[in-house]
Length: 273
Image (cartoon, rainbow, N blue to C red; front, side):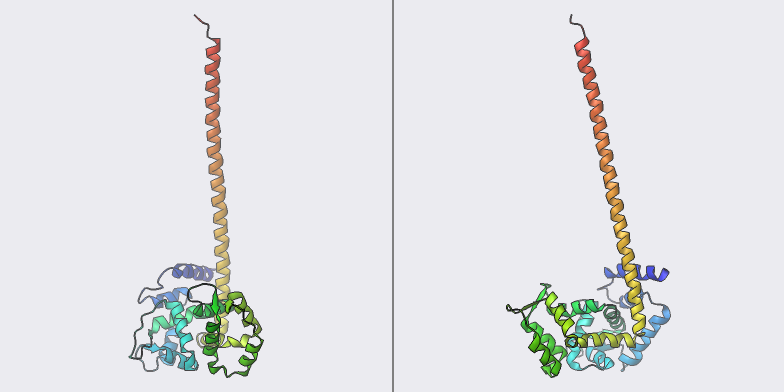
């Protein structure tokens, strides 16, 4: 459908474009989500009426946490959500070194985070501590992660889970192990998924985002099929070019061989004087 194509084209185009271009975040959000004018207007309204309460056109991570009714202890994770969408954002501050975000950057962060699948959210959490992309985190980082989501480990379920989790002897957690821990003890990382759920509820509702993800999945499959078809055509054309070149080469050799045979035959039949 037209919506599918709009979503596919926008996401592929915007994946490499406008990530770090100042002032382009609203355009990014509109095209990334293939928003209708009324939908973008609604996102603006929520930002102005529910997040930017002092009406100064900018918010802090603490204000974002207040909007979500999340504890301030979770602010470092919320910063990572903005960093995911904005890259290395400028640390404009009001004196406390807390980054400041305008309408565009906030809506872009919401859009990118809400479009992550559950598997993507898990990878995102892991990448917050595997900052160099080694594919593993150490024991200290894992405990820091739990401290972030469960300050002072006051949750009895966290204590119980830690007693059951057997960390590798070398003190490092590969992503596969991290994934298994998340599957066995989903409450350990639940706060991250809770943030996403709240954002989806506040912006359009969970069903709206799930529909967007379905459209994105359909569009991605179509892109993959198109790429596969293009590769097959390219391979076929390459094969045809090779066969044609080979045929021309063989034809040239046959022509040369015929001439050579005629030359030898003429030499052998020419009478000696």
